[in-house]
Length: 138
Ligand code: HEM
Image 1 (cartoon, protein in one colour):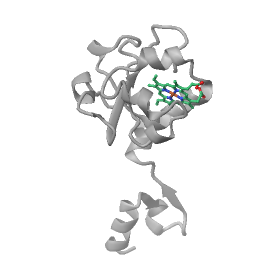
Image 2 (cartoon, rainbow, N blue to C red; image 1 turned 180 degrees about the vertical axis):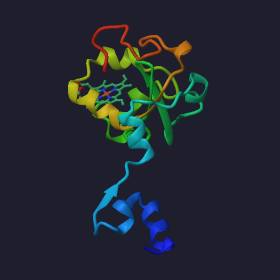
Image 3 (spheres, helix red, strand yellow; image 1 turned 45 degrees about the vertical axis):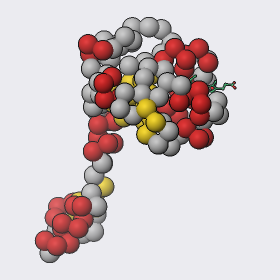
Image 4 (cartoon, helix red, strand yellow; image 1 turned 120 degrees about the vertical axis):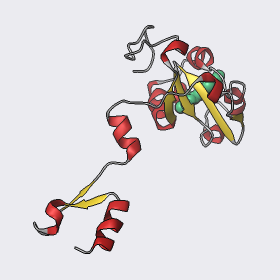
C-alpha cells in the first residue's frame, strides 16, 4: 500500500489489518475521546477553569464533581436554559439533585461530560471515583 494511502487511512483512524497482506479487512481505531471514555480516564478540570465558561455561548457546570459542557444543550433543556445559566461556570449539584432528575436525564448527562475536578476539589467522590454519597450517578 502506498504511504499516502496509508497516511490517509490513519488520519481517518482506519487501519488495514496485516498491512494489506490479508485481503481487505480493516479495523476502526477508537477516537481519543472514546478511548478515554472506555478507560474511564477523564481529564482533570479545576473549578478555576470551569469559572471561565460562564456564558450562554460557552457554558460549563459541575455536577457531582464532574464537569459538563452544556453549551449546546442549554436551548434543548426541558427545564429551560435559565435554570442552568444560574449555575454557569459553577457547581450545579444541589440544584440538579433538588430537581429530582429522571434516570433518562442522568443518562443524557453523559453526552456532555468533559472532565472531573481534581481530587482536592471533590466533594462527592474520592480519588478512585468511589461514590461518597448515595444516589449519585455512577
Ligand atoms: C447536563 C445537565 C442536565 C441534564 C442532562 C438535564 C436534563 C433534564 C431532563 C431530561 C429533564 C426532563 C425531566 C427529566 O427527565 O428529569 C430536565 C428537567 C429539568 N431540569 Fe434538567 N438537566 C440538566 C441540568 C439541570 C440543572 C443544572 C438544573 C438546575 C436547576 C436543572 C433543572 C431542571 C428543571 C427545573 C427541570 C424541569 C422539571 C419539571 O418541570 O418537571 N437541570 N432536565
